Length: 219
Image 1 (cartoon, rainbow, N blue to C red):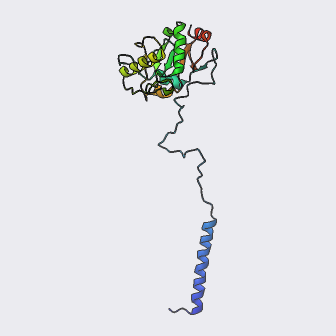
Image 2: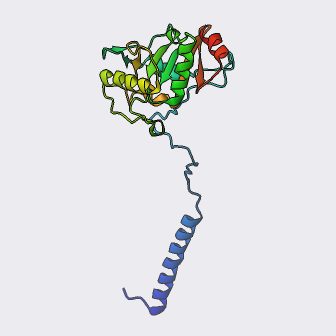
Image 3: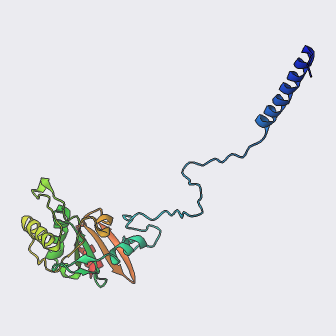
């Protein structure tokens, strides 16, 4: 069958109209759009997203205080009392819960001031001393950084640094949180104290020169 010229143009025009209508409907049709809000994640059926409390969130300001001290956070207590440490013989042991805990860096001058105060007032024996930041040093005080990978080296660091600062106290009872372990990472300030009272644990951070304060909280 042969088409006359005017029939060709008519068919072509009709085809164009049909295509144009379909394209217009596609462009104008509503489409479902998923927008991811900033700071959120699209839920997944096989993924659980949690936001843990930072390990170094030591205190919990939402809880009541005692003697001006804030309570320790649950995450910090979990880290301290569920992470084994080393004793002087290199044995892995839990952190004791029967005494206040002094987190002390051997090279730290503020720890030295604190220890001098406690020794001079016969309070040092009321604490568990837990060594942290064992690889550190204090060049301004002439205390070099050290490499500590075991309990022998940790005890040697305390002996050398305490001797440098003029601290005379036995090191056999010190416990050690080795570099990179959860306790070592959680304690970011030296000295840090963890003090029990009435079934709860409270935190003091930094050097406090008040003898009456220490006699009250360690008495």
